[in-house]
Length: 78
Image (cartoon, rainbow, N blue to C red; front, side, top):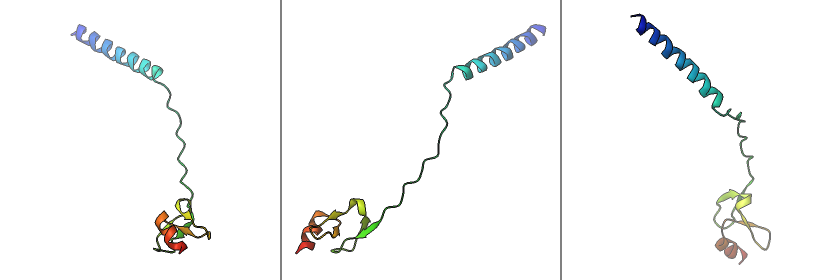
C-alpha cells in the first residue's frame, strides 16, 4: 500500500514538473490586435445599366462618366 502511495506521489510530481517545462518551452503567443474594419467606399451608378459599384472598381469613360464594364463604357460613349 505504501508503494502505491509513493508511486502516486511520484506521478503527480512528474506531471507537475513536466507541465511547467512545457509552458516554459512553448513560444509566447503574440498579443492580437483587433482588425480594423475597412473604410466604406463611395458607390457610383453605371449610366447604362444602373448597377451600383464601388468607385475603385468603376471604369472612367472619355467624358469622365463612370461605367461598370468596358462594354458599357463603349456603349455609353455613343
